[in-house]
Image (cartoon, rainbow, N blue to C red):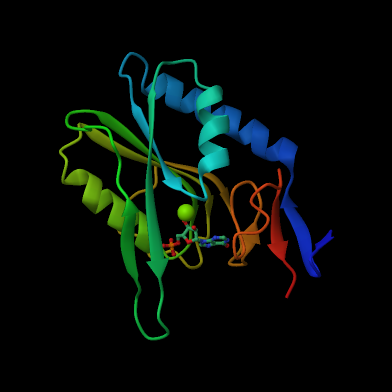
Length: 175
Ligand code: IMP
Ligand code: MG
């Protein structure tokens, strides 16, 4: 497929994503039955994943969002900036962080550290995609949708310069 002269190669099709999302929703429904977890989507990338995920839950839940930006300089490990905080009080709550992708792991580590400061009862991490060859993680990821190669990917919420979020499948950019 080619959009705006950029060639996109499909790596995970819509059917595979939807069936994995259903599996993840079942796992979370079992884990948090009667616990009314609060799902926190990381904007903007996770907006499609979290909406499909919660629609497949068989339990009650709350939904909130947080927005961060990560900046990676050439010789730095990078910094993460908070752009929009959650609105809910998560004290003593079961929190499920919903990410689109974990690349270096910097963003998720920042988020866990920050949310822990509000004393939730538990924090679980769910990510649709993980690049295991790049991620340097010092914390466990509870649920991973798909492990992928260290290529730049778009679609299903993920963007390249704000383009391609609307695509229902996941594509890698052809170099
Ligand atoms: P990390 O902090 O390096 O783990 O990167 C986290 C954020 O960078 C993700 O939440 C995405 O917003 C963005 N990101 C990382 N890899 C990709 C990619 O391949 N495509 C689109 N966005 C990405
Ligand atoms: Mg993200």
